[in-house]
Length: 111
Length: 114
Image 1 (cartoon, one colour):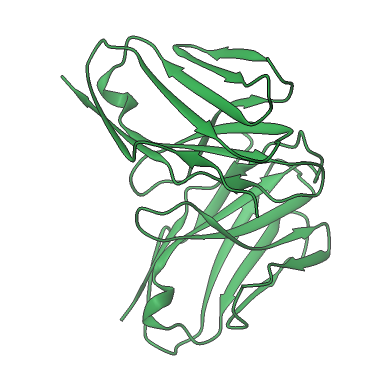
Image 2 (cartoon, one colour; image 1 turned 180 degrees about the vertical axis):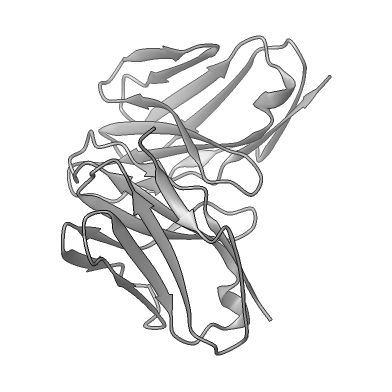
């Protein structure tokens, strides 16, 4: 089945730094979604991407749909303490297909 | 604000005692999903409803059932909870099943089995 690879499992950065996370697959995806999950809460949708090459921003967050349709990245600029959490990528291969999730990256921000 | 609501946020049940978790949505979305999420793992889809059509994932145990009495509400029933069923249960919705349909999650219910 389709798998989404996110690594490393954890990232540690200094407040104010930029950070980039990517998500890769051996399968082609038609949709990429990036979620952030805080402890004890449900995932919150950050950015949705629908077209190869698409670059979309949401405040300090920018995400891109890879041109090969097999990867996506999320960039967070000027990190702040509330950026701490688990970042999941998720993708769909087509209509009526279920959402496939990566294993998530836990981001820690040192003040 | 339109949203996905889950009640209760925390549920404690005894081994083998049936439990029901509830989800409601004000988004008027056609699709409602139930996911199970264990610690340090990604959410795992259990089943979904597209309107009144129920779609079970092949590896979802029979112990897990669901009901959707109307567009707004969906319930997860665990008939005989085992210790391994302790997890966060997430409800999500989407407008439809199209490839561009975004999924929105509720805050989750943390289930403890004693």
